[in-house]
Amino acid sequence: MITILSATVLLILVMDPLGNVPLFLVALRDVAPDRHRRVVTRELCIALVVMVIFLFFGRHILQLFQISQHALSIAGGIILFLIAVRMIFPSTGGPFGDAPSGEPFIVPLAIPLVAGPSTLITLTLLVSREPDRWPGFLLALILAWLVSVVVLLASNLLSRLLTEKGLIALERLMGMILTAVAVQMLMTGVGEAIVQFRSANQG
Image (cartoon, rainbow, N blue to C red; front, top):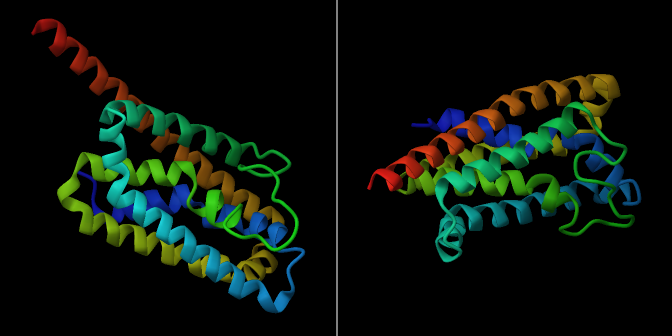
């Protein structure tokens, strides 16, 4: 059973606020400096709303499309692994591609940089496995989101303190940890699928 602390850490890893710092700075390059905090706050609030919606309704979407938990676990593991690989070996545009010019609205800051596919799948997977523990997972989401708020609102300061090399090193370290989480999620999903397949054949 996953604890609130481990769920919070997992969500912080998949949200990747430190890795998003340089991407936020690039996306805000055409925005007036006095609007940076307002834009970042707005985008983070939009992202929180989207994530809360998936926390409560993600499992119903799974039921609607008849997606099993182990299939979701395998899919989530694959997506997390791809994101982790891009964190360790970043492309020119970062893990989610190039950001559009002008003042961003929803895309790319809220979605997919904060409320990305890996975060939404992780939330859906957590609640689908233990639906009765949704208050704890909601608390974990809010705690992880608050960490992202603090980090991203201080993005200019962090960029100066850690320098570009420091941010890259931290992002790659988080990518390595996320790789292990992704592999574990993938192995869990495959293991559950094998058990279900054997049970079906024996029955």
